[in-house]
Length: 191
Ligand SMILES: [Fe+2]
Ligand SMILES: [Fe+2]
Image 1 (cartoon, rainbow, N blue to C red):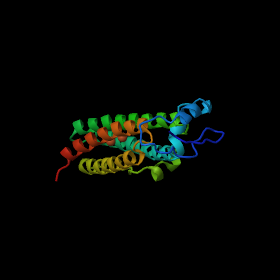
Image 2: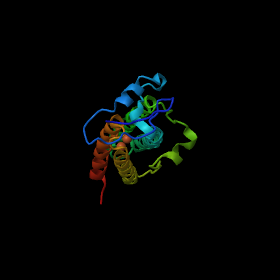
Image 3: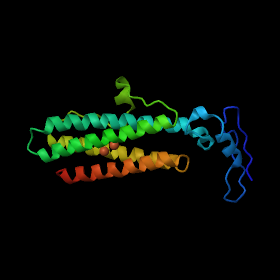
Image 4: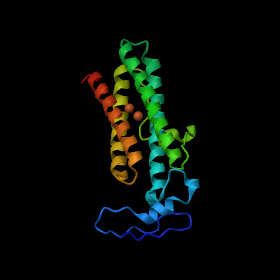
């Protein structure tokens, strides 16, 4: 049995009383029939929706800065001795853009607004932009940024836990690709 109360907006006000059984919260199912303006956001999001949107906007800013850094490196490194590495920077740039798009889409599904404001991007990003001219310095800067992204996504996945399984799956798929990026970069880094 669950006891849940809702305000007029259909937002959960009290946590269900634990019955010790695996039962659905029927009051929350009823509440899901109301507040249609909330789209995909149902009462089980509880108070976490805004925090999750804030986390996703931090990740979105990071992905945009990572896209810009990789593009800068791609065009700068093209004339250098390693066109293969330059091409890989472009592949990473496009993958970071795709990550940003996934995050922006999820933010909108959660009823939030994706923040693409250019003036605050670098202060909101977890990872840094970089203007190195030397190929090894570029690889090092990208590896640092990937490691920051891996740490941030790992923390977000732990924080979200079972509060929003769709967002968690998106973050897990992005994390797996950031780990591949870091792996490739560390192979190119000369000790
Ligand atoms: Fe990314
Ligand atoms: Fe990456």
